[in-house]
Length: 417
Image (cartoon, rainbow, N blue to C red; front, side, top):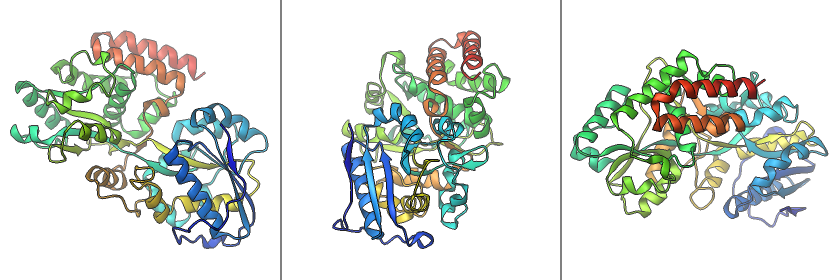
């Protein structure tokens, strides 16, 4: 599980000339613990560490790579005794236990550096108690992937608001096509639908307040979100028996034209293409506005770096965080032959894949409401589990809403207190 290389030599090619003037004379040892253990991410992490080492002749970078699932159970102990300087983790609520325990360092000063303005879309996701506790290095967009050829035949345009969404959906149903495919067998896909309808109804701040236990599930604003969702359910917008399908098993409905769209992460593009859809048939749009008083918030699960509160080489750790968030590095590590995801830095470049381009533009320029981390990351694990069960049940039995909300409220009072 543990693999280590002690001293990274300057024999590695330095791929970027990123300079960090404020930390030019780094020395000592920089200890990094990473959970980027799968082959492609591991290669990315090793190269970043090697390149940063090569930039600073008097600094030794000591990298430990731990299996991602293993790291979830080990991170607290690792941060508590002889902590490394820098660690991988996740944004928003997932970092809260380590912030509350005093194990992550407040790096608000770093976020005041001018270059960090290019990361503004994720600042909210890195903020707790008005302070910033880490930096993002990669994310990916969610949105509506749809059959533009079917839309074209029916004379439909991408919906910009809820009225247009419902009108499009009715036209599709009248033509014998379901509006959306979804597979809720493993629950989390229903969480994506709630994220979007709740945030479009009530806004990002409310979404986070609910996720952090500050709002009752029986609140009228929560009910308003479910009422909007029910409009689609009552129309018959979703494929039948979706609770029996995984997200992959629901893909053929879109491929075969039995459903026109799929609310999903960008990872759905590859299997849709593999199923035979061309980019002339498949397109993408941002989930439409429901309440014009709230700005767009987007699901974009974000992976992060943090400085341990027990870090011994804080200067080098801050320099490394500036390095990994710089445009050139974010461009390189998120390229198609590396992580294959989106750079967070708005000044970075992305591949010419149209969905990557559209997602980057959306998250960089049209996500002013904030970046959500997805239901099962924004909510504590136990609440997420109970919550997603309720969301799936609502999609199948919407008349059960009162009972579902009472159960979720009981769980909230138990879990957060």
